[in-house]
Each structure stands twice: as C-alpha cells, then as structure tokens.
Image (tube, rainbow, N blue to C red; front, top):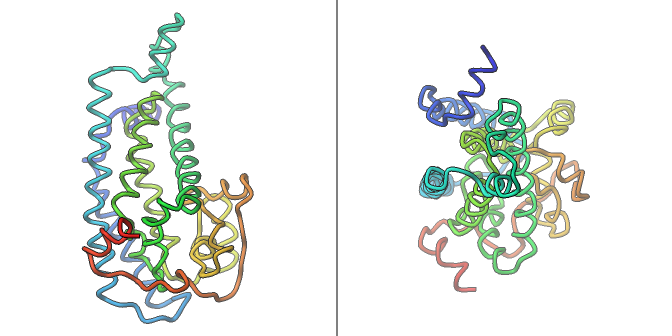
Length: 276
C-alpha cells in the first residue's frame, strides 16, 4: 500500500493540493522566528523595514519558480519523453523501462541529488563569476542575517537557477513531483540555516552530517572574503566535504560584505547589478 501511494505521490504533483503545505511552512517560519527572539545567536537590532523588504522580494520571486515548473510540465506533455528516453529509443532500448516502479524510485533519488549538487556548483559559480556575483552579492550584503534573508535574492539569479533545473528535467526522466518535493525540503532547511538562532553544539554536529545548519552557513556569510568562499551547500551538507570547500569556524564574527550597505529600495535592488 505504501509503495503504491508513494508512486502516486511521485507521479502526481497535484497531490500537494491535498495538504496545506503553505500552513506547514508558515508554522515552521513562526517557530524559527520565535527562536530568533528568545535564543538569538547574535544580538543585533533588526530593521522591520528590512524584514518586510526581504519578504516582499521573496513573494515576487515566487512567481519565477512557478513559471518554470509549469513550463517544464507543459514541454513534457508536448514531447512525451525526456532526451535520455529518446536516446534509449534510438538505440533500441524501450523507454517503458523508465516507468517501472524501481526506476521511479531511482529517478526520484537521482533527481533530489542532481538538483542539489547542481545548486552547489551553481552557488560556487555565482561567487567566482564577476557578472553573476553582481546579483548574488545582494543576498550577502546583509550584515544582520536572519530568517527573512532566505528570500533576499535578485530575480536574475532565480531565473538562472530554475532555467538550469528545467534543462535537467528535460534531459532526464525525473518525476515532476520531485521538483516540488525538493523545493519543500530545501526551503525548510534554508529557512533554518539563515535563522539567527543559537544552536546546541551537539545538535549542530548531529544535524550537519546531513543538512546545512546555521553555524555552517554563517561561515559562508562571513565578512572575511576567504571564509565566504566556503560552505556553498544549500540543502544537503556533504557536498562541501566531498568537494573540499567545507570550513568550520566557532565563535562570533562579522557578517556581510566589507564596505557594502544593505539595500532596501526595491527599484535600486533590481537595477543596481546592471549599473556596475
């Protein structure tokens, strides 16, 4: 029964309408917000205007992933099969093997891992490509990183990220619901590791084996440039350890970018990367 239900879950993205996912995320957000108030890692004064600004930017940016998701679904419905399935068909292998239960399981796990490792390398590229850094630095310039920093991204960066994900789904027969499941899981973790909360060392050590934790991600937001070129993982933490970019740092240190102030004007936020 579980197996059948799981396959239906993977093969039918509309199943998400049966659960109030937004309420669950809102509850997660509220709990982390409460922890920020009573158990803060850093005692800085957070601007209400800055929080509202970040949330508004996030609300606008939400439209972009939805657009790419439905565009990807539409293209899949038109062509019917992925590029990999088409190549299998050309060499005489039946694309029907892609619909076997075992294959769906495999492609689901492959999809989660491939999206996440793609985000890891893309994140590294944002820091090393001068043009893309103009957009990504807007996320890093906030010296009082907090829960709402999760949503502080320029729309160009979102388009680039989800455009590449659409290509991934075009090439491989990844179940469409994998897209939504990954976003749900990763957003939960990203909210967590941007939160300004004090985490017990034992809990941090336990969780950081699998997911990115606040102490790990705070190093990436360090004002020290060398330190900020570490800990690029967004969801699963082990990519940094595999590819040699993991850095552990304890204690208190400054966040943000040296010489940069936090932009809270929507128009300037959108156009500033194009002016530099």
